[in-house]
Image (tube, rainbow over all chains, first blue to last red; front, side, top):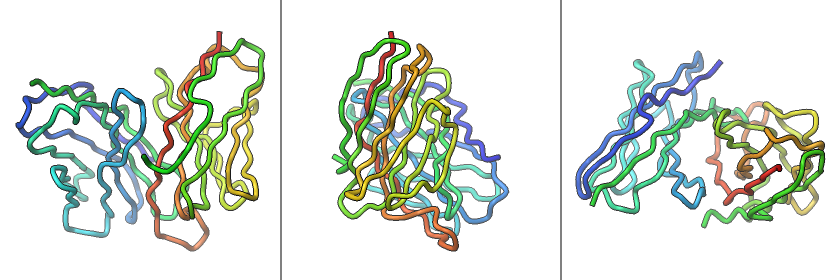
Length: 114
Length: 119
């Protein structure tokens, strides 16, 4: 069964600094997708970034980038130039290619210190 | 704004009651997914519909059911409610995924959720 592990329940970062959130996953599939979703206090689930396992290049979206290590089954999220609006719960999620549902980690609560 | 709408935003009801949660997917999306987010279980997949047909089931209780209508909106029905059913219920939509022989996976976009409180 697929499992997603986020070992950091809470993280904090100074405004304008860089922070990295960790995620590991377990799967026997070779073709899959990984996602980071952000859940601010409003509770809305917002897609931050997506990575296809067949792509060697790490995905980037403005200040957000990932470090995808397929052999290690690791998928970390780097937030550069942290802003107060980045404060939220961050969930790592996995989906096998052609599957129907996302498997989520337990989340990391990020606090941004002014 | 993801383009996925959910109503109501909040729902407070009593044990033993039945409620209906509604979801409208993004324009053009054919798949609708329901997830439950609770303190003890985290985020769990409940069920998926694709173009009106049930496509996949996750950890959905027998007291819960869902359907997708011809206009593609979906409803999640929760009956014989228990205290433990209190949670945030999300609907998500995507263009298409989970079809046999289709390896591409579309990103799921989430609605704002319905917070259900069972007293």
